[in-house]
Each structure stands twice: as structure tokens, then as C-alpha cells.
Image 1 (tube, rainbow, N blue to C red):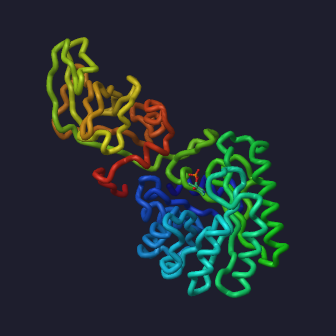
Image 2: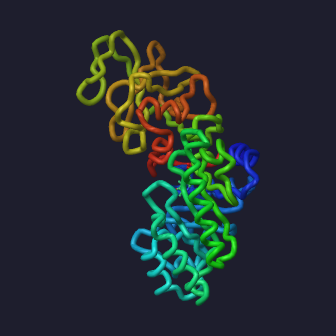
Length: 350
Ligand SMILES: *Cc1c(COP(=O)(O)O)cnc(C)c1O
């Protein structure tokens, strides 16, 4: 984690926000936040005010931004935890102005090409006008302008150019409205690693913290290891069907070991036959269907005793699969592997 933050800081002069949504991409929000701040991140970012409040409660003191408000903005909770909030529509800002007791710190979230969150281009003037009135009445203070890049994973600055232009336009409109020069932020991990023109005053980095580079251009450091003990071992003659529906049948006399992890713990149910784990320095295949709580490993001639540790993924390389390997075997992206690891898996800091 520390090495990843260093990697990121070496590529930008902008402030780094550590995005720790989805429980710090499955690694523990407080753990990731503390490590990132210690390594030089100046801000924290979360999806919801509730996630941000939990970071405050854990003693994190840097500025925190929350950008999604299911059920409406909870101004009271945001003010109590001193959390900045992103406001992505005229309606949302209107509702906030109607309830804000103390002066709220807000970031105007403009749509720079996602059509997901953020105020559509045609309503920026209305949003900025309402923000100006709110700021004059001391109900809000505009401290940031936020966009998001739809195409940064292509690692091609030309693909980001329209969003960068949109961001500059939003900045100019905010300046022209007399709202000062709030902190502008647009880039996430991919933009940070591949396109300095997207950096503005701050970059918001999530995936990169835990070793995932969605642009595929930089090798980051895997931040986690998933291990499990063998809970059952047996010999199996040739022709033994394994697991539900017997989809795998042993083609020789072999040994099978069971690990106490299944799809309820985030092991993808659909896996290519290449999927495997590391046991005592060897890559051994997962065979048969992934069950809710268990997977079976074909250990060949070796019969491993109960309690032998298997590494499902880790940063080491070699026989140890990476999170990226699991993503490939499951036909998905590394993000879904790390955020999918279930609550039964005990987290500890190495
Ligand atoms: C998740 C998210 C980020 C971080 O993206 P990564 O690609 O994980 O670095 C940044 N900004 C917003 C709005 C996000 O939702």
C-alpha cells in the first residue's frame, strides 16, 4: 500500500485523495485510509456520508469527501463528522439548502462524460447560480469542483481531452460566478498514472492503492494475501466425480483437498479450468463446482495434512496466483475479486 501511494505520488504534483469506498476495496476502509494518509495522501474519499463518518470515528483527521447520497443528503451527519459532500444536481443542492443548519462544505459535481453521477452540462449554470446564492447566504461554501473520466482506462490522453475541456469550462464558470477557485479534481487511478493533463488540483485514487491499475500500464503492488487451511484431504481413485453435479471426474488416482472458502466468501463460481491455488510452492488446480463454502483442490500424488496452508492469491508471483489471475479465470476485473471477499474472511494486517 505504501509503495503504491509512493508510485502515485511520483507521478503527480497534485494532492492525492485516497478513495476507500466499498470497505477500502475489500481491504478494510480504516486500514487502507490510515496507511494511505501515513504515506502522504492528503484527503480521503468515500461513496456515502456513513462511510465517511466511520473514518472520522476512527480518528482520521484529513478532509473527507462523500459523493453519493442514497436517500438524500444527510446534512446533519455530514456536518457532525465534518465531511465535505459532492452535490450533483440542482434538486440535490436545493434540498441541501433547505435543510443545512451550519455552513456545509460542498463540491460541485459536474458530468464530464459519464452520464452517471454529476450535473448534466445543460444545467451547470443553474447549479452554479444556486450555489452562489447559497454561499452568499452562508448556507454552503463551494470548496471543490469534481468531474470523472469515462475513458481513462484506455491510457490515451486524446480520449480524455473532452472531459478535461469540460472540467476547465466548469472551473471558468465557477470563477466567473465569484465562487473563488475551489479545488478541481477529475482523475482516478488510470488518469493519474497515464495522463498528467487530467490531474488538476487533486487526484482521487482507489484501485491503485490496493495494487490494481485499470489502465494496465503500471505494475502496482498487490496489497493482500488470501490464505485458507486445508480442512479435509482424501485419496480418490480414477473416475471419481467431484462436487455438485460431478462436473469434474478424476482421470487418474489422485488426492483431493478441501479449502473452507466458496462463492459466499467471494470465490467466483464461474471459473476457467486454469484456476488454482498455491500449496507449498506449487500451483494446484481447483476442480469441480465452487460450492457456497468450499472448493476442492486436486493435489495429485501429494496428500497434504489437514491444516496445511493454501494461498488463494497474494502479491508474490510464481506459483501464487494474483488477484489479476483470478479476474482472468472468472472473466471479470480485479476490482470485483477484491471487493467480493466476504465478511467471514478474517482481515489482519501483516
Ligand atoms: C471509485 C471512484 C474513484 C476511484 O477510482 P479508481 O479507478 O478505483 O482509482 C474516483 N472517483 C470516483 C467518483 C469514484 O467513484
